[in-house]
Length: 378
Image 1 (cartoon, helix red, strand yellow):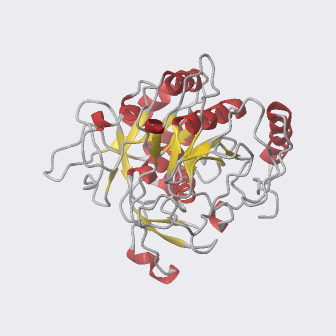
Image 2 (tube, rainbow, N blue to C red):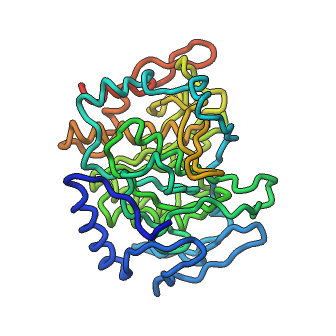
């Protein structure tokens, strides 16, 4: 990296510069960026030194979040649950699923593109040098290293000894690409809360949420899992973000079971997203819900930016993480056309802006698959 992020041209450019300066004052550091192996930012004085266990998972010792601090333990570790990534040559991309037509993206963009809005993507495995993200990035944050450099293409080492090198590499890049598929003119703020293997802690999630709160993000995307979502600090911050007007979009998970096993998806402050295939049939890996209102989006064999092994690498990926990215972009479109809505009203609006989707037996799902044209015209 050259030490700066690209920012969107036009009226928002000045805003991003002002935002960068404001962040420097707010967080007490210069927003100049540094490479992962040449860090220029020491941890803030209020941060406790992190330790590393024998599987390479960083475990902060305290949670620096008001109103109360509690001790974080290894049981608070969560991940991003990435599925396998087939890398396909650019010439063969016609063989994979491009979901734009399915969700009526082009039709919707005649009404709104998300211009002027900020989507905070809290994730890991960001390659911010990918050309697909050029011109769409704002100043990001790394909650693991406590600096403004969210770039993490991986270290080429199987740190968690699961037999897969850099298992989380490219995950955040792909999620950001799906946000831009729905809302091509939003500004993406990458917030690194997971390492290149996909692991992180509640404490890092909290730091990332704090950053999103400080910059006034318009939409929050959380395509992650945690072992203890009911932790009061997490719920406290989510409540504050929603009260401030930011819809919080979360992935339902890839366990092919009810989201009742994923407490974050059941939070009153979030909108859970499951995955369907190109036929609007529930993906065989996707979590689901019959009673809890949630939405679905394409999440099978999607074509998008990965940034691994090369900066410009594209490929196919499947997962509810990427369906959530599509719906986060939809939330930005909804905010564009309904600036008067609260965050929870945006959630409800998205639940209504759907087409029918089905399970494998042909029964309609509790809610349907997102339709962007309905998002901007209803």
